Image (cartoon, rainbow, N blue to C red; front, side, top):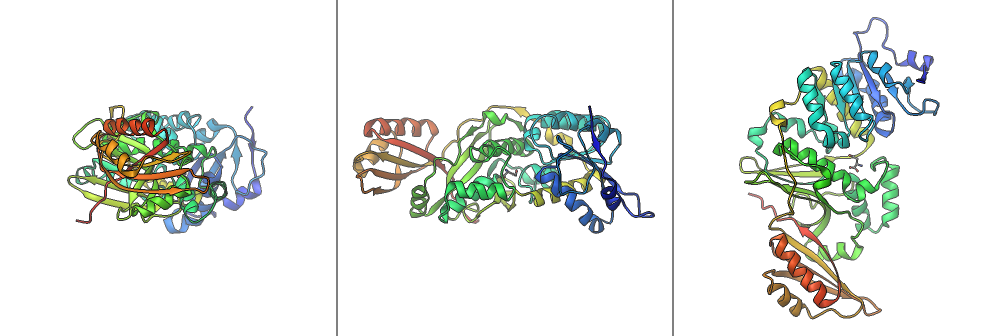
Length: 436
Ligand code: HSE
C-alpha cells in the first residue's frame, strides 16, 4: 500500500509566502544524490529565476528513511502525478520505473526533464515520440556532460553544426580515476573518492568498464547523427587494464591516455565507434583536461572543430542543469522533432586509427627491429617504440603504429603475439587535431 509521510512543519517552511506569484510546482522522481541536490537548489535559485519553485513531493522507495531534504516523500508515484505538477523532474536512474513514469507524465501532458542517460539511450525514441505526439517538452540536457549545455544548442543549429565525428571524455568518474593514478594515487583510493564525491554510478563498474559512456555515446549519435544505436552494440572496454607504466610510456610518446567515446560517420550511415581508453596526443583538445572534467570535440565539414569542456558529473551541476531544463520546458521549448528521426544501425570498429601497443613477456622480447619488420610484413608501420625490463628479467615494450585498418592491425598484432609468445594489449590512438 502507498505511504505518504507528510512533514508538515517542513512543508510550511518550503511553501511560498501568501501573496507571492503562483509557484511552479515540481514533482521529483528520486531523492538520491541528484534528486536531493535538486531539492536543495530549487528554493535557492527561485529569486534568480524570478519564479518560486516548489517541490510538491519526491518519489522514494523507503519513506521512513531519514533524509536531510525538506520535501514531502511518498512511494506512490501515481499520487504525485495526479497532483498535476507543472514539471516532472526524473532523477531515479535506471530503466524502470523511470521510463513508465516519464511516459505516464507525458501522456498526462506534463513536461518531463531527466538526467537519466540509461532511459534516454534505451527509450529516447519512444519518449520523444510520445512527447511530440502530445506536444509536451521532454528534455535531457543533463544526461550527457551535465555542466555544458551543448545538446540544446545544437538541437537548434543542426545545419550549421553538420557534425560527422565525435570524440569526447563523457564519463567523469573514469577520467577522475585515471587522472588520480597519474598523480600517484591507487586505483582503489581514486575510485573511493569519486564515489564519496557523488560522481560515480550506484554500480561504479558502469563508469570504469565504459557502460555509462556507451549510453551517452548512443544519445550523442542520435542527437548529432540521427543514428539509432544500442549502447550494447558499441565496442566498449574499460580503464581497468591501464597500468601506471602505460601512463608513463604514453608521456614518453608525447601523449596521454584518456577514457574516450568516439564515433565517426563521415560519408556513411554506419558509424565507426568505440568506448574505451585511447592514446591522445598532447596537442589534442582532450589531452589537457584533468579530473572529473568532461570534454567533447565535434567535427564536421561545415563546423570544422568545435570543442566544449566542463563538469560532467556531480550532484550539484546535474541538478543545476535539470533546473535550467525546467525553465526551458516551462517556456514550452521542445527539441525540434524532425532532427530526432533516427536510422537504426550497428556501429563498426574504428577505421584508420593508429594503435598504442604494450607487449609483455616473462622473459625477453624479440629485438625492436624484428618486431617492426614483422608488423611491416602485414603493412603496419611502427612510429615509436620503448622498453623497460624489471629486476626479475620480465620485459615490457610499448609501440605506436601509424593509422591502419582495424583488420590489418588485428592480423599483424595477432601474428606478433603468437610469434613472440607474449601478452599483448592495445588501445586506439586519436588523430592529432591541428589548429587551423
Ligand atoms: N557517473 C557519471 C560520470 C555521472 O561519472 O560521468 C554523470 O553522468
